[in-house]
Image (cartoon, rainbow, N blue to C red; front, side, top):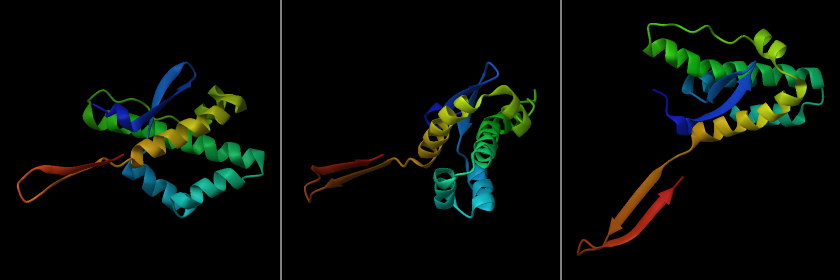
Length: 133
């Protein structure tokens, strides 16, 4: 079962796909861009429209396939992976612009940290409760 707090959803060809930013996806992005910081720069600075579309379709396929790979790992009934060609055929350039937001949301959710800290004084009374998200 997938943690819904870690996903952003997109609809491709009438099918909803959760986008998940996993460790595996992080490694693939690092291989392609040399790190996460470079990914943001590449997407923002991309003046070549066709190249920008290639990057977004690659990212959508990568992040959507994470949920399929997790499903296939945990279930006997396997689902086929989403290809970049399928993403290109089943979407419009306008939708891809919206998907950039979903990619960003999935990445933010995948890297969100939950930290809780409680400090107590010498008598055991709670002094401070720090929560970082």
